[in-house]
Image (cartoon, rainbow, N blue to C red; front, side):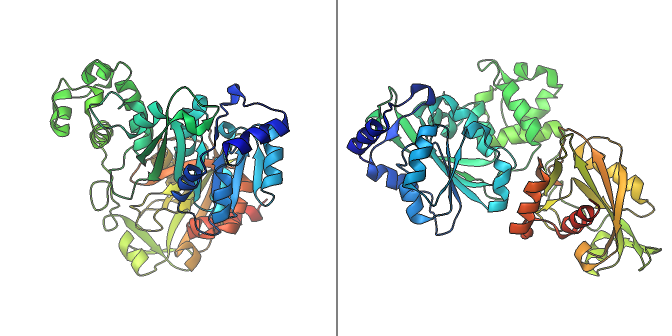
Length: 446
């Protein structure tokens, strides 16, 4: 949209850019088209634009894929956008309050926007938090913030923000923008960053909550040595520094992302990775083998029951919060069955000599790190859909937070029933078959 078009449109609407909303309208058409091109949108792909304003980016995104969603806080802009882009879904609301959980049913989503400076950090954390339905982000940010996101160790810009975003996302600083490409022109330069999820295995897994806590504490007093900032953690500092390959006088800004992850795994004594420590031991676990009446006939290994499709036993646990939302877990990429798919709050096999109820109590502690009263809600017979498992379904209540073992669970979140129903309808392949069977059984009990 040309500058003359922006000014004449605003005049026709009887409005001026609102400082409190951070309204600075991009008027360089070539730049707008270039930004959208970085998304690599294909026809039919889902995209989401935050704060579209007068649609400088929107017109180029719509030309590539009509499957878009706009979130605009200014009601005057919403009216204009509905007239300009009648086929595009528009939400009149605050992007910082938008519920991303509804996007899981719509497939991987690409996100773009010229973000208001005053809410940029909040939006960044919101849209990159685990779990996320987002597959790519391209944002225009204040240059200083963009530099912090893309910074490397031992630089002034490198800090907690770099690491907290960078553990899951690769950030690429694309280009600097002068204030003159916006109306009104801001007093500082802007920059465009492209963010993509890190490929599987690029960095080690770790406990995300513990990583976040340690990084924040480590950078709390930036100029102090790290051992002083983390003094209350009780680390064997000599052993830790030897493991990290750093001096004992090191500071937080001197550790790379990989070293911060190693520090976290040192603290939790877990290093989950494919084929390494934390990977599932499919040959060591022993299960009871049962007949068609769920009577024990023998025992064998986890590997054998799956490879030979032998009947065995399992439990699934549905954990609800006080609002009635169900917690779902995303299975670790290292799982031997259904890696990366969404599953019940907690689930597991009944070991040799165990019973269903005892297994359910054990599994919720091992997978979620909490205890709560469980009630048996139903049962499923062994079938191909359940992986030849006889399943008992249990229900519990807990508000979280949960402690998720990264070797077992990649991430998790509470979802409303309506969100899950729509998600299953549109993308059933996102879910482990056993969960789908249990979900249908629980739905039939409603």
